[in-house]
Image 1 (cartoon, rainbow, N blue to C red):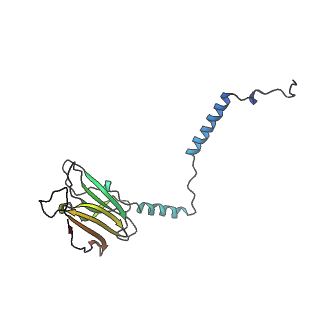
Image 2 (image 1 turned 120 degrees about the horizontal axis):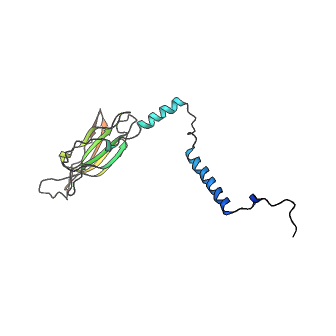
Image 3 (image 1 turned 180 degrees about the vertical axis):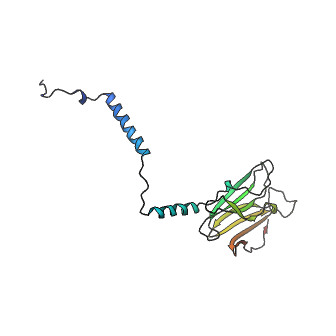
Length: 192
C-alpha cells in the first residue's frame, strides 16, 4: 500500500463527539434565531402605523367577562351563555350582544340579553337591555347579523306550565334606530 504524500490530519476523521458538537451548535443557532426576529415590514410611515394600531384596538369587540351584569343570582355566578359581535349602530366599532343567566344547577333560569360597547381606552359597559330576566324568557336561538340582533324567546303562558317545557316561542329582532334599539313588530307569539 502506498502512503499518501500528505500526512493524515487528525481533524479529518469524524467521531461521534464531532457530530454531537455540530448538532449542539446547530440547535443553538436555531434557538437564537427564534429570539432574534426582525421587526414587521411595513410601507406606512411611523405615524400612520400608530394610527392603525389605535384603529385595530377600536375594532376589538367588548369582552362580556369584564362587565358586571345586573342579575341577582345569590350564591351562584352569572354565566354568559352566548355572545356575538357586530357594528349595530354604524359607528365603525363593534358592539357585543351577550345572553346571560344565573348558573343554576337545575331548571331553566331566565336569560337577560344585553348590548355592550367599549369606547377606546375605557372598560366595556352595558348600553341596552334587550331582554330583561324579569320577563322570564329563555333564549333558544340568537344571532347578530347585518346590524340586527335576532333571538327566539321561549316563555310560559301561565304558572301551571312546567318550567322545562316552554309553550310560548317568540321571534324578536332589534335594530338601532333614532338613538335606541327598537324591536321590530312581530307576528303574535306562537303557542304550542
